[in-house]
Image (cartoon, rainbow, N blue to C red; front, side, top):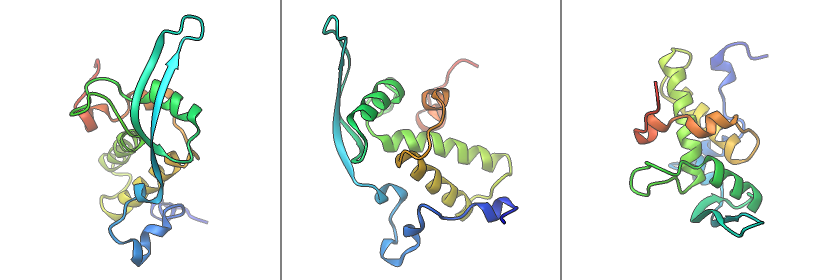
Length: 153
């Protein structure tokens, strides 16, 4: 049974990245992606609540999942270049990059292979809808690190 952090951090879901034919690929290449639109309206008034186009999601996501994630958890202000997040890649990266960097800063994991494996495994779990953090993580985590967006102290 694994007892150390080093023993626990290994490729379980992203082992395909170790295959020679996948050299240079990332965890994001393990998914097929599609462009999706979100149009949410108030059923009583017809007023548009959220309208976003050409958002990138893994193909297996239901439209309901796309609607919820984009309307609630995509950052919709202050993102460089586009003004808002446009891809589930960005959201997963924003959160996991912060978590892994915090673990490195705390001395709990080492930079390099260990950090990369943990990053890949966590991103995979989020993108494959096997794991989802709570709402405050979706809303806030990694905004400063990824986009320079700082909140109240």
